[in-house]
Length: 147
Image (cartoon, rainbow, N blue to C red; front, side):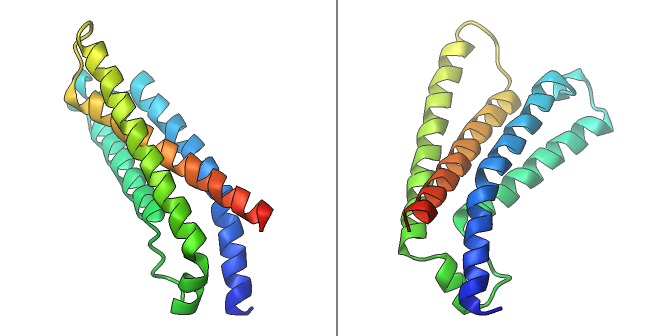
């Protein structure tokens, strides 16, 4: 398979995976808020859930940032063209805005309901990462459809 074919396959896979990853990430967060929580005690399962959240968040952020050190330089250049870099920047901008909107909402909520720092951070990270993933996937799919 040539570098161009490999890059084309990876770009199509990335466009399909980003929205699916966002949905899985949000679903995983729902289990955090309805299931085990740190304020219930210091059980091992609580720490495992937090470690899973952090690991998944880091992996998704690295993917959003465009790290692809496992491919050749030619394939990386083809998969990170100018359009992809613009899409990534726009997605990260949307993620930042979603984080700020979530922060404002949490601020208002904290006036009526006490909120722990861990829960607030969870909501902020989930909003920012999920919205950025969705936006990037949507823009990449649109670019593939138009191109």
